[in-house]
Each structure stands twice: as C-alpha cells, then as structure tokens.
Length: 151
Image (tube, rainbow, N blue to C red; front, side, top):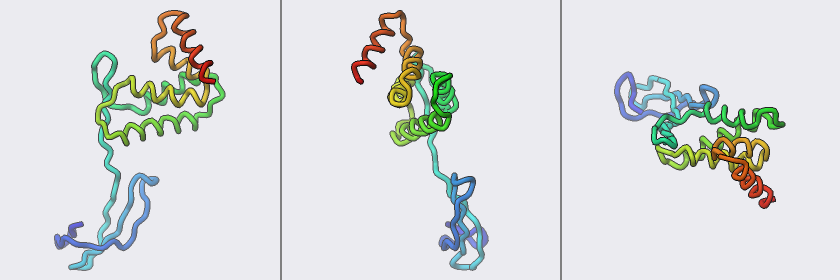
C-alpha cells in the first residue's frame, strides 16, 4: 500500500479490525520509510449480477424482489422470516459463487423451489404455481403428484 504522505510503496499493518458491521476491514498501517500512520479499508468486491427475464429483457439482480417472492409464497404459513432471509442469502451467495454475470430468471426460480420444497410444501406449491404458470388444474395436479411421489 502506497504511503499517502511520502508515496513510499511499502507499509506494514499495525492493527486490523472489522468495520461496517463486518462488511469491511479497517487497517492501520505504518509507512516503512517515513513511519507515519494511515488508515485503509478493505471491502469485498462484488460484481453486479444481471437477470435475463423470460421475455429476454435484462435487469440487475435485486435481493429484495427475491425476498418478497419468498414472503408471498409463505404468507400465512409457519415459516419464520429469518428462514426466508437465510434462503435469500443462500441463493444470492450461490449466484455470486457461480461467477456468471448473467443468470436466467428460470435458474433463480429453480433455486427458490429447491429450497422451498424442504421448508414448506404449501409455500413450494404456491411459488411453483406462479413460477410455472399453471394453465389448468391438470398441470397443478401433475406438480402435486410429483411432490407426493418424492415422499
């Protein structure tokens, strides 16, 4: 790290501690040339995710939209909000770890359904009915039968 006072290219870390509720690390450094101290902050670089919708349009990933969809699916169900936040965090982390900058909305929908299936079956069916756009009672029953066969 270059010293802001003398521009010497080397410094040593004197102290490190979390900052911004763990979102970054605050480091106190000392220049090896002039021995003056300065502070730097280290944050994780997060690349923007773009969601490709079914109609081909693109929009940036919005965790709030994901969480709202989970809340709607679990409305009046005994699923704690903390579990929904955990699911949203898992999905967002999975998408970030894939290192793909563009992801289809259908892929996100499948990730949501995989997690909802193990949390609450009614919420899973609610989400699937909107996500898969059930046209009639037969497609709805087909999905229910699949769920019953997996048990």
